[in-house]
Amino acid sequence: MSFASQLLQYTLSGITIGSIYALVAIGFNIIYNSTGIINLAQGDFVMLGGMIAVFFHNTLHFPLVASGPIAALIVALIGILFERFAIHPLKNASVITLVIITIAASILFKGGAMFLWGKDAYSLPSFSGDEPIRFLGATILPQTIWIICVLLFIVAALVCFFRYTMVGRAMKACSYNKRAANIVGINVNNMVMLSFGLSALIGGIAGVIITPISLIEYEKGSLLGLKGFGAAVFGGLGNMGGAVAAGILIGLLESYSAGLLSSGYKDAVALIILLLVLFFRPGGIFARKEVQKLKHY
Amino acid sequence: MLNIRSLKTYYESICALKSVSLHIKKGEIVTLIGGNGSGKSTLLNSIAGLAPRTTGTVLFENREILGLSPSIIVRLGISLVPEGRQLFYPMTVMDNLVLGTYSYYSFGNRKEISSRLEWAFELFPVLGDRKRQLAGTLSGGEQQMLSIARALMSKPKLLILDEPSVGLAPKIVENIFRTLIELKERTDLTMFLVEQNAKLALDVCQRGYVIETGQIILSGEKEELMNNREVLRAYLGKE
Ligand SMILES: Nc1ncnc2c1ncn2[C@@H]1O[C@H](COP(=O)(O)OP(=O)(O)OP(=O)(O)O)[C@@H](O)[C@H]1O
Ligand SMILES: [Mg+2]
Figure 1 (cartoon, chains in turn purple, yellow):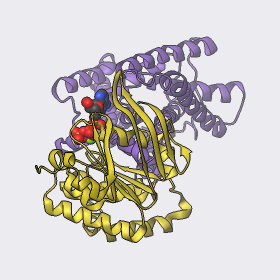
Figure 2: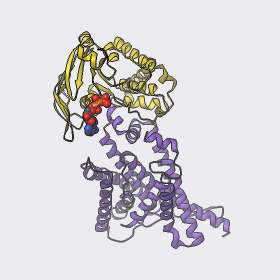
Figure 3: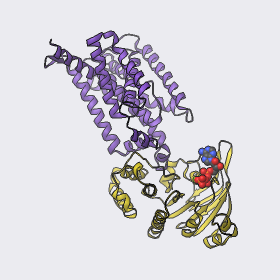
Figure 4: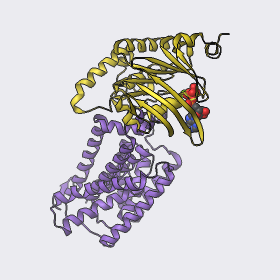
């Protein structure tokens, strides 16, 4: 393999894992926008998506096309229940209290998964086989293409949702001004619940599509959540486009550092970026002053 | 149409409204005047379901609405033009107006909504010229117009306005009030207008109330209030 094709190979695997980080970061943003909460159980939604899909496919022998969507929907439901029973009852709690509750939820999700499925790692078959596709001297797994397409699809769907549907507009409106949202008759509570459902759904989908190329186990969510959070902060909390770009960038940097330096540094990349951004540009790399100001008018 | 009896509103332990009673009949413009911190906004927020803790009764079309959520109150036909405009600043004028229709929006009544949008742009032509502009980039007067137009999008039977004139140049205030009067003549909309600018408010209203430290201290027809010594002295600046 020439150096160029090796580099291409790293790029492809960086984009693949970066897409997952991007999805996790989008999940962080949706909840952050509607509540100001950093949901530290976001990574566990990914783990649950993978685990539940594995359960339906490997244990109950459902076909893969059914297991994936079922798993994602169940995770969405878990997200909604989580909001109803753990976040909603604490109406007047401070944001920091609620963030701590999400940590508790994360521990609970991990514990539950370990209780149900043990500490073993599981896998799913790839959606359309494992025959690598040759591409300019590098190889692409079909699952990679799936992952990238799912990311693109979700981003497009979210853009349409927030721009063209009333519910999407209302969710956005809540994130800009809760009082005004109340005044026009939006039920802010429902929008918060919906944001948890939507974030969990996206997390669940990420879990389903990543499991065929990367084993899933009960603790998998922690690191994914952390890196996704890094991407969300890097892209500017609440900024969807920023989340996608930052997620992929972190994936790429990680992949290059693993390939060109040593795979031992891989996991440190996202953390170092997170710390640097928090030090030097707490608004994220894409923060635009005017927009930021407008948002808090 | 609206009948308030011994309404009390508390913030934590502070009692901001101490037993307020008033009524508004269909088709009237009623005004409420009072100084800073007298409880005007508190009263309006209590009607709109936005106040934290309230007791008493608020009947709207003979139905108790105290304790209902703001989203239900909007559906029943009360729309608030809040103090400080409270727009969705990073969204376009169009989006702000469309969000005003949230309470009855559905795919089926798109026609009705677009004709209501047309109507709003006819009422406030400036907004029509700035459909695609972000609300945060509008001038103060335009923002106030947008706030009123957004409130009208919900098809209210009762429009309550919290100091629409505040911070605006006299010419713009005149423009906005002319529009409100025109609106009243065309649609027979009932309005409850809160103002610090008593002259302006008494000019357009039929009846009024005066509030001081959370209590209604005076009420009467327009002429009665205009000639009341207390009102003349405290709010119209005449001896
Ligand atoms: N959210 C709040 N928490 C605690 N106290 C409040 C709150 N809002 C208003 N108050 C108090 O209630 C009283 C009435 O305030 P309110 O805003 O209703 O007055 P206002 O007549 O609308 O005044 P202005 O003309 O300045 O708008 C004031 O003493 C104010 O300090
Ligand atoms: Mg006020």
